[in-house]
Length: 269
Image (cartoon, rainbow, N blue to C red; front, side, top):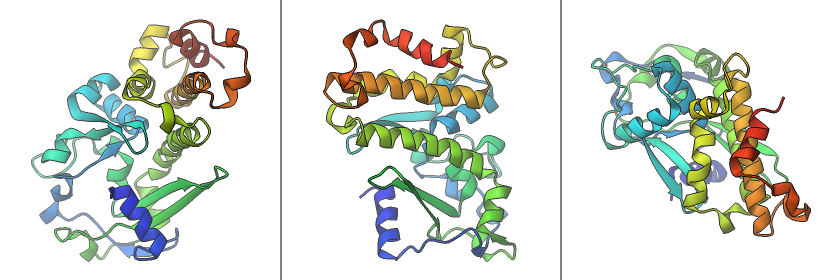
């Protein structure tokens, strides 16, 4: 059972109760255990996580993925995923000698909200269901002994988590659309996953290839357009297998290369 499946099961059976935004808890990172939680841990990254960290380091998204990430393909979800490779095998590559984080201002959503976790899933109608919970306490963590008291809302605001959640939810909505409306679990392959990776994790390459400057299209808007481009491409592919809304569209609609379709979306107003 995966970590996400385990969390979902515990939330459903009540062994990991959800909390609301007004729930109070005590926590503050402690110098004596600083960085311990950044070792031998699976940290999955969304496209927005990678984009912010790569921009913070002043490198391209593709270079960031190549240098710091492992790329896999979930046989359960039939979808590509990215994790921090050093953290999974030992100390995180961004952990400094004192245990603090080199990319702290741009750290991923999962890193910035601990010990608060958040699970998102969708019902049969596609409505989002959000559950917030306190992550199970690690034996080495001294943060729970702090006198500092927070509400969940205060913790989210202090960590600037809400923007990350908004961007993450857009990505989750795309995956949910692909799996439920396009039946992607039937036809998605590692090859197709590799094809959409530049759209998800390579904004710099796309900007350069299509001559789209940051002044013309800001980072957040470009992120929205990239996800829309993935949706369009997957709808075209799904139609070839008899799934999705494009199955009744005339074949002429799909004339041109994949890059032509991507360019059309990325340059749209």
